[in-house]
Image (cartoon, rainbow, N blue to C red):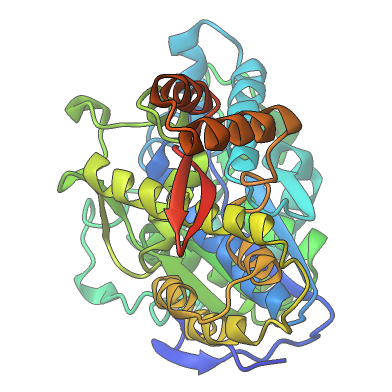
Length: 454
């Protein structure tokens, strides 16, 4: 196993990765709140965490990853105020909350698979862990680290002295509205709800009878319950976006480590935001693009994945269609190099040594852009080499560049024969037929090769 180095948010340093058990590296990924269609900004994060899994596998680690699907408890404020996002989505669509959740889980998983992302070992739907949530709330109450208000059970962050450490928050200077919503019943601005009570007259389809009234779990609670249930004590890696650091992940750490008296995660990885043409992704700006929107403009999910992997997960990325076109062209070039391998017939004549430079690059804090440079600088790139690249990046280079069928081969033979006879009218006709099959003929080093056009 090679040394992998990762930036750990916990220490704010790049550290050499050392798992508890190399045969089963335990990873938890914060998943989507399934109330609307996921956009490309959402999926950039999952491409980065797919790369993490693939890098671990390339270094001979076994991986068990859990990805949650939030279908209850995530309020519009990201804190403890506002309407549940699923309830809001249901009201807009005229469907019930369960139908909304099913619809958008379906969209998410469909696009997840279109991007050829490694499936998690567990798709953890929040509403499947209500009993575990209740047990966790009871444990926190028993430890005396919560208090009750008229709208819920709150975690008292003053009872967890290390609360500010993870996000490096100045709790003394924390003001309502800066980071969390604040109510008169909160003892501290940083306190958060672990269970919410449904108020009289409040419409809330998802409700469970607990503590002698109807309610639902706080957003942060599900991750702690799922991790403890599916992965056990102290996981290796917890992933998410940088927006999770000051609230969601700080709260996860506090409730988990108080309840179970164990460190929640050894390594914390956070990816940066995606902007579009320099602007925040926003429906009001009209710059919310889904994978279907990209497809309407002629770009595949793999083209988008190539664009994401050309950057670094810790960098703020600016998306533009010009840059996406450049990524599409780069992937097309790679596919044509694979196609050339098929035509040369050199499927098994290398030991893959040229791939090691790419692996060494991506082992340095998931530096996929440097790995791509190493791939393009490799001296020997045969089919085995490209198969290794595909396992590392999941770009479907080999799957999307197989040997052509016999009909296409016959057209190429006819084209070459007519060109040799200088029958250009006929050869041009055959060239157009090949173009209709997304193929063209190129000459290099005295040999002719077929290539994909797009």
